[in-house]
Length: 483
Image 1 (cartoon, rainbow, N blue to C red):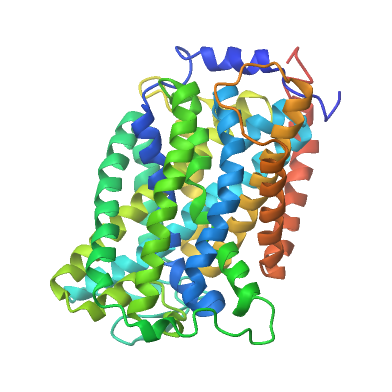
Image 2: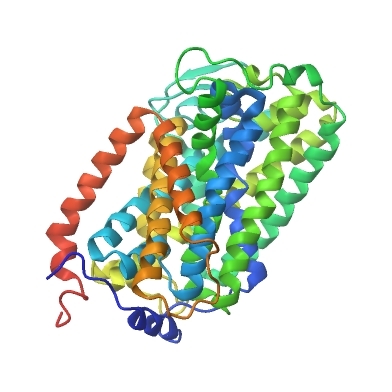
């Protein structure tokens, strides 16, 4: 048994054609773009923009977004080629299995838990912060012990400071609700996502248009604050650190690729969904962050989990404040929906390959969704959302996402060498320049993240390697065809 054995492309394509036994093909190109926009516009825009500006980049957080988007564009082009070649659920895990072998596929599949599951937990915490702000407007206040994790300090809108609660119950509530919706079906989930995407894109545009008139140019001076002497605290290193902080918000196109087996026409729809969502969201991100840091001095966003509401307050449009918060909650909801869906599809595919127990690939008889996987991640993600501080979650998600992008970029070059004549509905241009550039930028952004993120990544990966050799290798269908 070889841990480097690759899964033949013919086998992967055969799995993609077994649609009657597996997942329903219900997603159009438009739904795939909406799926990507749904995952991209969320915590990175409405919450982490303020953190990146206050702690790292200042008003130059706009440059941070451009830098992150460039890295994403290179990786996105590589994703698009793979998604058009291998329209199978599983995203980077599936692509790695076809190019770099089973062990690397396991590594990336295990890494994707950091990207999707903890990404959903991160957004769940931010969702709860905006919910508290909305409830406070109607003088509704939840018990302090039930709105904050034990290791977190939370400042409420009325000035009350909570130094650690028992659990973040609102975050657990929304994760559980969306997990149950995903069990009901992909079509129903996509319909809700499309509706939520329209709402939050409209709010982003309203914020940009109305806020632009109230920009104070003095807030842009200096545009790139001078470095404090510490790497990552302003200056150009701060711009890089800011890009690393907000990077996980760009995983929308990655989430699109996990739904390949549920796309009506994956060869056409995957590239459109991946690149279309990236282009739309990059433009909105840059304009939004430019307006936000023009409305309020960047340093006032320090520790603010709701910077969009803080910035919009200076416009005088008080009657729109509530609407803004409601739309942000809707936006966060769609992000979590896409991330939870993506995570369940990755584990579904790994289980079908024998690397995880059959439990994770059981399809509901009526709804035809991997319902037991959804229930598992309902519990897993809820624990992180309820008990872990948002800043720790965000950095773990970013480093996991960046590692996935690096391996996909490597995979495109490997596949071009091993299978140059394989049909490709979309071809990554300028190979090897594009994948190499993607690798370099993603590694640079990983380097800019805190040492704690690297330590957690190493521990998480070590745990995954143990599980692979104890269970995955022995039960792999590729290496043990008789099982």
